Length: 211
Figure 1 (tube, rainbow, N blue to C red):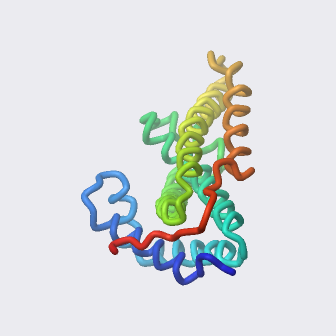
Figure 2 (spheres, one colour; figure 1 turned 60 degrees about the horizontal axis):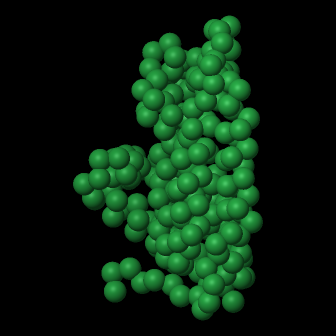
């Protein structure tokens, strides 16, 4: 038995995007509004998200569907990490260019920034959708683990970027020795998420929003 059909997964996802776009939330709402207002971006998001929802829907057991959603959520954390880092740490100018070059090589940094912004909009939007879907199926422990992971991964990613920028300038990075521990901590939480820790037990119940 398939517990969540692809149609239900996409209905909930698209509803999430449009509801958040209409909300007053300055961060989440802005992401969704930008996505909705750019038809090419929205079409690309929908196509990519739809393909992954097909994969989720094909899982014939409840726990496998939840694990597929968790895995997809993790990927969006990774894909949106660079823009989150640049914004939250206010990395601009030459520092921003050096960081972008670490991931994009010799590509023009303006083009790299535009490409990364596009990736961020699509990934952050899908992450919002998986939040709703995991809440829909009652995976509250999974959501807490994912929230914890994002905080830990953001710290590791920031150290990685700061260290990489220092290396490009042939200078020392004071927190260099902490990077392996930060990476190991993130990987440990990731293993718990993908290993099924905290999967909801009992009868499978799906929420009905708005009812």
